[in-house]
Length: 494
Image (cartoon, rainbow, N blue to C red; front, side):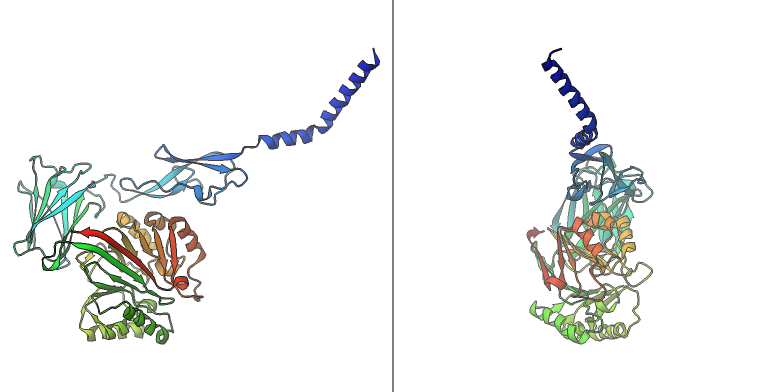
């Protein structure tokens, strides 16, 4: 064997030995190179791929890439993403870490015991024939109901009464006090088909206000098939929307002033911070004066806590207040007693517990005000009047101090009405309100928290802010901004 061959063999042996000695480190390097660049999270909605999120392996959290909730379907409400369809898996949240490709599912809750989907009108138009007659042309109803299976509910804006009845016989006519409701079955098939009409007629003229109508079918939740039409004052045929909502700066308390398109002035709460009445009542009145308030058509005091009513007595003494709305839950304080005396002295119409959840308050002929909760049991906060104001191009939800228990009740009864543009956050941003399930449905564009700077309650709580960061586009805090104003304008109301 030549010297060169021996040299080559020696070099080969040395290389083999080096590989054996270095194998662990080479293996480590190789395995590290084979680690995945990321993970895939697939979101399923009713066995259909809803969205796919790619997650970087160096930071294995779903983060802000989590998809929006799927749309509400039928009589189900979306409540969250979960790794198992029966809800027993781990919940998927914004900070969920993953270490493998996973599939997660939409989790739903079912409203009521019925599996019937009811029906929803995809469109409707109301036509004022004259001062005595209005027609509503129905859109597509799915499924198409039989006329004798439909309950018609109307809210008379003049009396505030809720009237209901079902069609019978072949004439399809109902009589509610001074108004008759008839259905025009064009093809005579006994079904509520598209383009057929509901006709409302009152011989003495339809009362001024917003006429709200519901069509309820089987056991489907009331209020899901809604229609309304406006009867304006003084022969006016239409308005241009011009709604201004002023969330006032009242420290650790609540107060919001609304100007409607038909020039009504509505004050929701008139609170001042505990033990700071002398300081904050003048601040409240000064803001009302600067906003050019001349009278208050309605003052709604959501519940009898000091930080919601303590400025109301001064408002009654300063302004002509035409109507006061309060829950029937009684306050135990001297402030509450003085308020009742001030209401009696003012001589205004008082509505104390004479309305219920689901009722419409006839406060305006242009904007709709519906009570979604009032006098829920347990405590004063639970008794809060929760009210939705529907404008032509936006919607607002005023929640008082309603806690999570009340939010859950509203989800069960009025889920379709909770999706709004502006939310007055419950209980000054306390963690006792603004549950994740609630915010997932409300999905506000703007959330307003009325609270005082460095307040002793620590409001708003950090966990509430974290939830709002997920479900709200903008968060306004009056302890930072002071008073905050919203405007909804531009559309024609007819």
